[in-house]
Amino acid sequence: MFWVNVPVGIFGTVWAYRKLRDTGERHGRHIDWWGNVTFAVGLSAILIAITDGIQPYRNHTMGWTNPLVEGLLLGGVLLLAAFVVIETKVAEPMIELSLFRIRAFTAGNVAGFVVSIARGGLQFMLVIWLPLHGYDYSQTPLWAGIFLLPLTAGFLIAGPVAGTLSDRFGSRGMATAGMVVFGGSFIGLILLPVNFSYWDFALLILANGIGGGMFAAPNSSSVMSSVPASQRGVASGMRATFQNTGTALSIGVFFALMIAGLASTLPKSLTSGLHQQGVPQSIAPHAGSLPPVSSLFAAMLGVNPVQHLLAASRVLATLPAAAQRILTGREFFPDLISGPFHHGLVIVFAFAVALSVVAAVASMLRGGRPTDAGGTDELLPTPDPMPTTAVLGDSTAVVTEDRGRGDDSAFSCLASISTTSGTSQQPDGRKEEHMALTTLDDKVALVVIDLQTGVVAAPTVHPVDEIVGRSATLAAAFRRHALPVVLVNVAGGAPGRTDVNRPAFTPPPDFADLVEELDVQPGDHLVTKHRRSAFHDTSLHAHLRSLGVTQIVLAGVATTSGVESTARAAYDHGYHVVLATDAMTDTDADAHHNSIERIFPKLGETATTAEILDMLDKTR
Image 1 (spheres, rainbow, N blue to C red):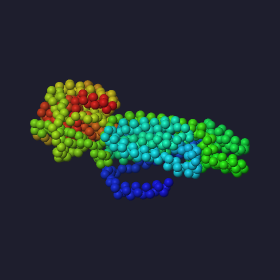
Image 2 (cartoon, one colour):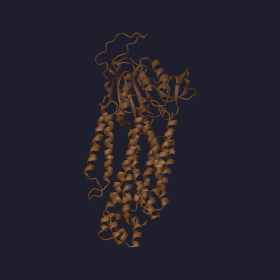
Image 3 (cartoon, rainbow, N blue to C red):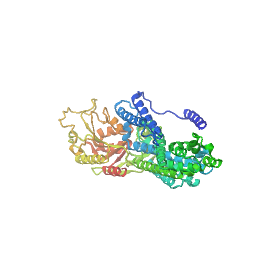
Image 4 (cartoon, rainbow, N blue to C red):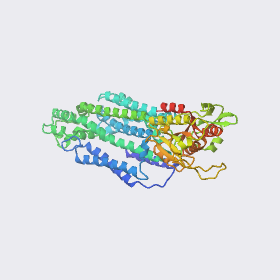
């Protein structure tokens, strides 16, 4: 095996060094020593306990009652619990637990973890079948690998195709369908007899590989696309940890299930068969009562289990030659345990089916099509250009721009212009050209600007009670879908000089109080700003990033001041921006329409409250 692994490893190292380019951001960070130690020791303790748990202990077929195993399991769980607590306390944690608030990230990792466990059941299928079909025990490991090649072929065929399709149509449907195929193949394996036809088996494991391939690439893409760009290294490490842990756990889990299935009938069957071939009554029960794990491991490692069982007593040499040939032949042991072995396989594959269902449900719950969470885009495919409207003189044109990416200079240089548009109805009856709302991300937040007592009292071009009502409706809908709601008020201004004279003003005590119609809830995040933008010198960006938010919907007043400044800052931070054009207003009609018609299409997508509510329901 290592003659294959070593050359592949060398090639991969050289190729990666020559071809890959480091385009990520580097930041000086401290190592989370306590987090590393508690995680490594805790996880290792659990894996060691599972490995020891499948070995016999005293008169038990397995070692789950072994105090050492129990101690390792308990200690491992306690250390991992301590690890979680530590990660919430340290300034620079090894694992950003806040990433698990992102539904696509959590669902993808859960699905990947259980799939890694489910794959372990296939290791038993050829243990008995190969000797029954004339293969020597010493050759079974080699031929088992050869006969499992359809599994690899299915994965290699389906993986690239699924990755391409998921980039176009989204990960959720493809990954979920892959798990349905994956689980269905295990149902087919349950229905196979022990002495099955190889081509039936080959078709089923081909389907298993295709299902795994349909799942792997879309799931990885979904996990990595759901997190902020600055967290992709951490996310990749966490994803790999879940998958490798699942693979290691699968060995212990499925061996435990198989041993449990064999333990009820194997000793009796083995004792009876040995006695029929002349093994003395004093020896046969002892050999038959040996733990099933020894027979199972012997067969998997290419050693005749019967010969292994009788070697210690040296009774094999005393038996007639015919009995020796039968006992050490290729068919005696497989025929003897075919019944118990099939019973164990049914348990193993039924558990694999259950895990496949869990993975399918997790994939379905990952949410809509994942989008880039912001930051640098070098590691992800470039998103398709989205049409953005701009007003050129008296005509409206569509200018191609990457939604939520780039800058105004890039916008002005793009040359793809055509005459098409969308319209929305404003509160004053005026129709406006706008960029239609395409989707709402899995993690989208509502940010309501300056709907407070002292601000809504000012005269506006639209009835302020309508603006407040629509903003309150959006807030209620976001809360109903368990999405973040941020309510912003202003309590000061920038000190810089301007050409517009600002008279001295002493705000009343209730100036910054949010209007009652917003119905502030305990889960809402409140931000008090002292500048136009809600991002300037506030905790807003850090809070949104901690929740994994990739898109914000903006409403409030005033359109040209707090709303526009916050939209510009959100765009610069890498968020996808949606502006609820009928849930905002200003004191100047021309300025209001200039922002909506000329500025906002460069910063994001514009939509009415009704359109946003409709999209919210469609994407949830």
